[in-house]
Image 1 (cartoon, rainbow, N blue to C red):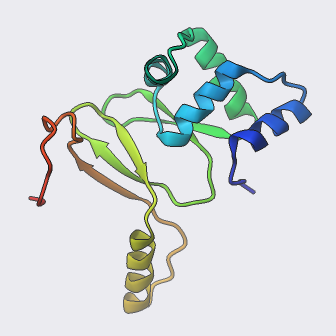
Image 2 (image 1 turned 135 degrees about the vertical axis):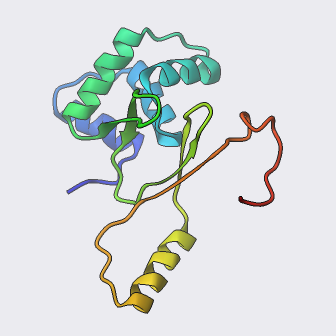
Length: 151
């Protein structure tokens, strides 16, 4: 069963498995708690947010460890072909995908759950699993403009 992890729980679990505590791993987890990213994105965000330069080799080693213990999983991004790393969670994964920079922003909103529940009831359809991916342009790629409507 997939657990709803916290950084403290992950560190405790790693310790129980014989892994030493790692500040670099902790920074990787902090970044992944905010959003799914590729290894280079993780490196850049850690440098930007924490002013710590971690080598890509170290990042890949830590990600491999986290995948091995089933805390992180990776998917190939359909646009950029990059390997995107995500934390495993119990909650449903709903994302916004920028078509320009390929950034993936994870969102978890109750309104999506309500929509699925309503559609399920209205159509007499048992929904076992779902995900919602919305494709568009992030604030940075849209020159900081606020978007007020769809197509």
